[in-house]
Amino acid sequence: MIYLQLFWVFIQIGLFSFGGGYAAMPLIEELVVKQQGWITQTQFVDLITISESTPGPIALNAATFVGMQMAGFKGAVVATIGNVLPSFIVVLLLASVYVRYRSSPIMEGVFRGLRPAVLTLITSAAITIVLTAFFGAHGSIDLNTLNIPAVFIFIGTLILLHFKEVNPIYIMLMTGLIGLLVF
Image (tube, rainbow, N blue to C red; front, side, top):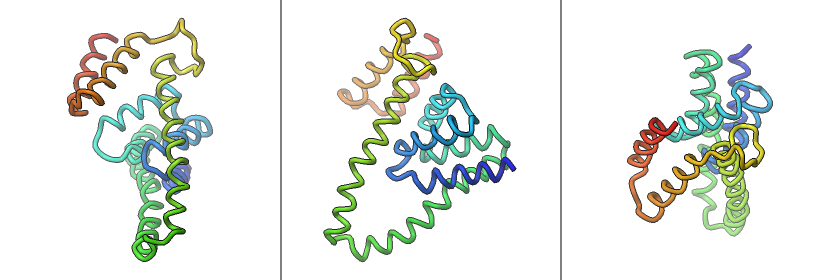
């Protein structure tokens, strides 16, 4: 039964994850954390961290991670296939339509409409991650629970990434080491 549940949840995530991995985060949170209760909010943020720290798409890594946690290797395979299958089928169909109609005003209008929605999904996921990283899994802003080291790591990482253009791999290695020392 768990294999069918994993497949069903991750086929939904794969089917409705427009905009890539970060856009999928609110849907993963809703289905995996809130509805199924397979992982906690803190584990969800850890899942994002692990998924971002490993090669491959975030949603795919999340499917593998959750599948492995819930049902071992077979669960990881089932969840991963469920996550990939919709994209594979939809991309095959849409690629043929896009190639044929890419200059169409209708196609341009569709993409102009999708971009702000995808941005909203990504922003929503970012807010959830920031609140959990800075204030813990309880989800409320309470200055008594503010994680000061996490705030400094965030600011330092933002500066290094956007103003100093440091390679993200070096940033991940450096912040992992800082986390090991500080936490």
